[in-house]
Image 1 (cartoon, rainbow, N blue to C red):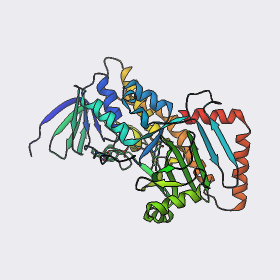
Image 2 (spheres, protein in one colour):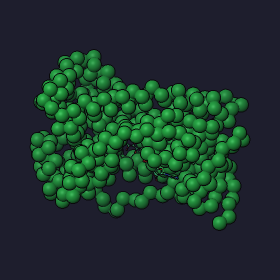
Image 3 (cartoon, protein in one colour):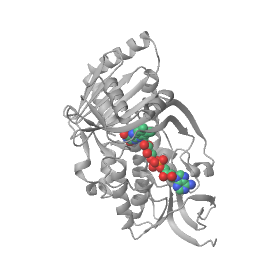
Image 4 (spheres, rainbow, N blue to C red):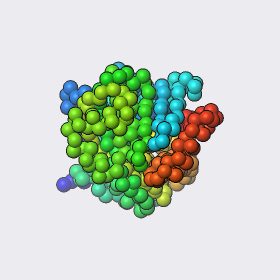
Length: 390
Ligand SMILES: Cc1cc2nc3c(=O)[nH]c(=O)nc-3n(C[C@H](O)[C@H](O)[C@H](O)COP(=O)(O)OP(=O)(O)OC[C@H]3O[C@@H](n4cnc5c(N)ncnc54)[C@H](O)[C@@H]3O)c2cc1C
């Protein structure tokens, strides 16, 4: 294999949505950018819906709008969330509404593949972007530059390497950062259903016997399930045929949306809390799940990753002319800008997960009383909504 050195301002390793968004943000600001990412397999033609969906907050929408990706999404497939109803495990209930919070919507429910297609199209039109359909497998850093070697034998040189390579980040390992992972011993089971009753653009969430079930509104009275289930229970759920799974979800959600008809195969994702001791190293910055993993109960992991991208792009846009992209001063600005947001969301999602994972009547009574208290306090509710809106 021949090694051919190519130089860039930045190399983004990892082509999940966070990596592709980072590559687009950098290239649109005029930086020569390399994206190292395998080409995604398209959804089978005619597939009704992607079972990977995200609840995107207004901060994610704003970033994707700035990059002109949001405007290209097929509007007929976006599901706005106007209301959210959360049920405790002893009849406590919380209601959040966009109207009361004076915002156009609480979130948008969007299929992963929809955003990905729009990002891919935008990326292919960028003259400053080179897409390497390969994997990064070697990295060295010195005072002058970072070098990344790819599985296809090419070598890329850049001022900055961005690790957007997910939970088991290879870049993170190369920079010597320490990740601490706590398994929730739960799997997030996702699937989409056609619902008999209209969902009214409402997101529903039930806390049930240490498990959490969410039904998120998609267009045309479809809903997307995220069931954070104990691993053994999740395995059993994923073995059910579509009719059995539909019946199981109807029962667990007290027939709130009537009969459900499963329209996409169930998929499972192991759930964990993962913290990383630092987001930066000389000429390297981490974004997205490479930098943090949280429980999906608040639907915020992708939003957090996209806010990493927005913060990094802003630090770079405001850099002094004499600094290169890998300057430690810039990287420290990025890390400082992200610390509080990441820590707050980690504490909130982990705290809620722990609160609802304690079995027993006393624990149930206390947490449901807490929910009732929150429900009666408009100020606390408003604070929770603004935190969730991002
Ligand atoms: C069940 C569930 C529901 C969720 N719901 C929501 C939600 O509603 N809203 C929300 O905001 N978040 C949600 N999340 C969180 C969200 O899914 C993640 O935070 C997000 O997908 C992380 O994206 P990423 O691009 O950082 O990582 P990934 O999507 O993991 O992408 C990393 C990419 O890097 C590639 N890669 C790895 N190593 C290399 C290498 N050496 N070279 C090149 N490429 C490499 C991988 O192949 C992969 O393509 C949910 C998570 C789960 C589990």
